Image (cartoon, rainbow, N blue to C red; front, side, top):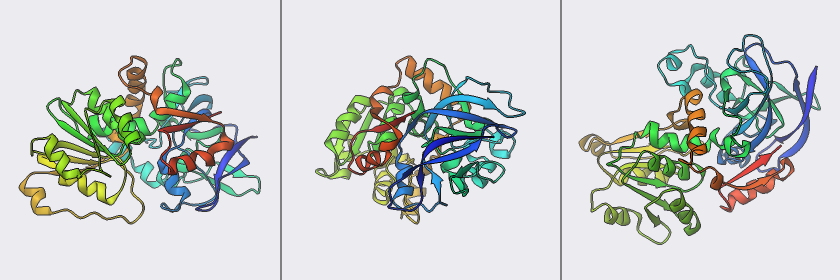
Length: 371
């Protein structure tokens, strides 16, 4: 037996998504759970696919930032039960490989083999189109639809009193940004932190820096409106790089020293190189933004060694989703981080293309699809 449901399907770059009737098995395979989605964020990573900057198989249900309710569980599932409220993780872990057992589940072998290729752990798809074609699910999730089948470790149980629209954002932007600050950069209270880019990830990196008590948080963007939002989330200083000389302004704000931590949250060559260029001696530049295929950066390796600089990547905020997702929910419900202000519009699935148009224009922070 199968479940039929509506989903926003990607078929070709630079073409509108089409809301289509698709289906998947109503009985989860062993080790998997069937989740009825209640909310999905519309993320810039989905836009990378939509405009052709990332090559993916088609047809595909986009979306990877979701929350919902467990409908049923497959054989062997022990950590979830029907009715559990969950946030979905696009790095489900096998819990057995060298990365999982050493505490780095976002680098799991199974993720690199299958989820990163938009497949389930057995290397197959789960969704079928009306024309009987296999439909891929973005990052193995496909949250622009009302149902999804995911591995047990890809659905993290959370408190029932967390609203789905806000909880969904923990599935990507919140974890990626807060984690980049807390887990990857390991910000200390004595650090001055620079965040380049004040979109969903950048604002959450600012929240992460505030959460751990960074003494100064500088936000840089081209938009005064986004810089105003950055102050709401914890920035102490702002730089409009469209009007000000970025490096001179950082130098002024830090007494010529530079910053101990710079977090790049856009995914552009120039901002990655700028983050590295303004580091203090011994500083750490963290790349959390996702670039288009083929982008390469240039750095001076002598400066890297001479000044003991670090340039590191941050995948999913170097998180442990099973631990960090519930913790972030606790932070939110106890008013230590702000998720309400992140949700600037709630829409139905039929309006998803309009949400991407607004994203291209820089309107809002996060649009959330409500099912």
